[in-house]
Length: 166
Figure 1 (cartoon, rainbow, N blue to C red):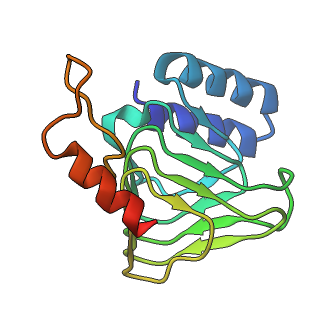
Figure 2 (cartoon, helix red, strand yellow):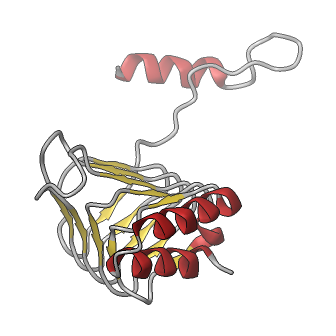
């Protein structure tokens, strides 16, 4: 059984008042797929997880639209109590890359616009307009060494450029 089916089952049980059973199904999902998918979150039936959503964490104050694709190790967290009015709303056709983090400021809400793309490793702390693409900082070489402990060819030049630009 896929993590999405287990999440749907957990959410359906919770909405019918079977809170303990919903939490049990959530725990089973967590054990099998190493995720934490809150049964209180609102999501469309056509949500898709890349790589079975391994390591994905979704808070209960999250609303996920249609045709959203979430890759593995994604965290979507609201910094307020469950049931508060603060939410993360992810509109339709959004793609969230692996290891991305979407987190609200304390006691605030975030909206991810329709068709937005959040790149792998990006950290989102504010609203994203519809159709926008968000990516993380580019990787930088700070220092390179060969197996002998000597600087790698070009590493000193790259390190110098990085130091000069800071």
